[in-house]
Length: 303
Image (cartoon, one colour):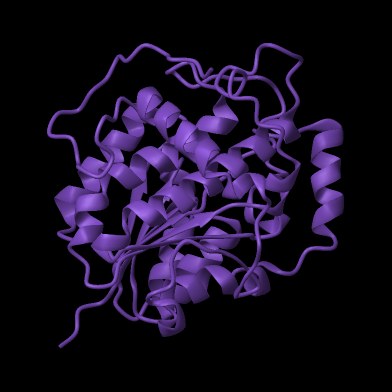
């Protein structure tokens, strides 16, 4: 009897992450929900489990704004599972005031991009044990607006902080990494693709992240966005469709390949972002899982 496929999804207690988890559970996938607040995610876990064909829906608490939490989440995944078939790097935030992670990195950049860079590295060994591993990175069309100053990206303290440019930059970084990672994992048979989710994906109206005019702006744009059940189709398609079993290194919208910006295809910039990300996370051989957990690393600014 074929074993259920195992899918881990960050930010799967709300929005498109939850819809994706629910629909994949209905298809017979085992689900790993990776969420910032476990207590506030129990109801969603129960809802997804009730709809699941396998009944296995695990919940792992992880604040993506904290690298120690990401290491702990990886360790918990390794203790529960001997492989991972699909990783959907879905979680995203817009933070309307300048905030830093415990590592001293601007919180939007760390949560939306760098955390997923680190988490993916830490579970690559589990993905390699799958016969059809897929990594799916949720990006955004807002990456086209990114200015992306490498000397400013980590701290964002050289000019007045603005939330939307910080978000745009984080999504461009995610695309640059997607295309570089797809190339590097080609020989491993692990596919890596990105998608545009529309604005319904992130908890833009969350009082913890956005307020005032920023909150209103996202509320307004959501009026024109498709329902989550419609917008999540690309997530589900990339996770489950046999049509994309061997497709890698592409950006998707509405279940079809879609051209990203020229800047997202800048391989030189992609390699710079990769090198910076390795320094910030303490990774020196990304394609191998570290034997020892490194912590207390000094901040290394870009430039």
